[in-house]
Image (tube, rainbow, N blue to C red):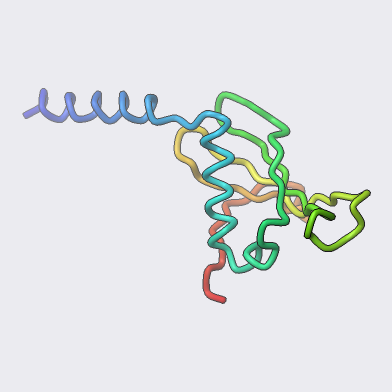
Length: 112
């Protein structure tokens, strides 16, 4: 029985490390959640994601609002709407809270 449990733990650990997100996977993970989020869906295709940090544990990604080429706004500007961290091991999302000056867990509001 102990060997079976140990085997399951080792198999899970191997899966977890093998399933870690790379930069493209982290961007895709965030992009998919932004599309599902009521707050970001209104922007349609007028969002741009830029990886600003690449650490072993997470990727720091800025969400920009695109202007021009069919997107409203001054084409000479591209304001940052939010910053996120995507956990490389779990895919968990954290959004930067400017008031608290820290990243906090983020679950998109899909209710609208």
